[in-house]
Image 1 (spheres, one colour):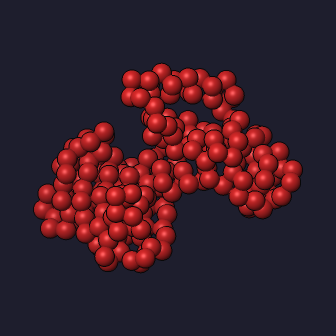
Image 2: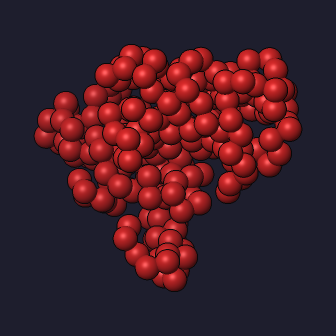
Image 3: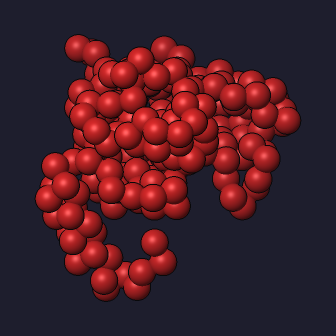
Length: 209
């Protein structure tokens, strides 16, 4: 975080090697865990973020679930409180990166919503919704034999930018129509393996074939 651009690749590789040396377990404290998963996702290591998140042996969130946990605990080893937000910051990865819903910092309070799902190989779908000052906002993406689909709800008074994993805009439909013929969505181009679209409020179902 906050590194000069010419050092990011080297530092990301060092972080990757450190995680492998830890056998894909967390060895982070409260502040490190808060940013750990999102930093991996932002640096091309989303699959690694999932593997660590899903870790079923101690220490890790998956190990807590294996012990029957339905809340976050104070310590990785289960000591202390069994209902404590100490490591809860890491869970933002689920909705910000895996599901892919983010408030735009330039237009806060969900005035503008950025939908950018980051799927992983072992997950077939993900969904997330939240009540904003403008109403319910939601996203659900799914992988199937036909392709990749994304459904979003943009509340009245909000706008959105939607990123769809794609290399060609012509492969996409919106609510059953070819994307180029839609009057409610504007194509912005291909960026970093995503087709980018701008929308107003409404319900949108985009499918990549």
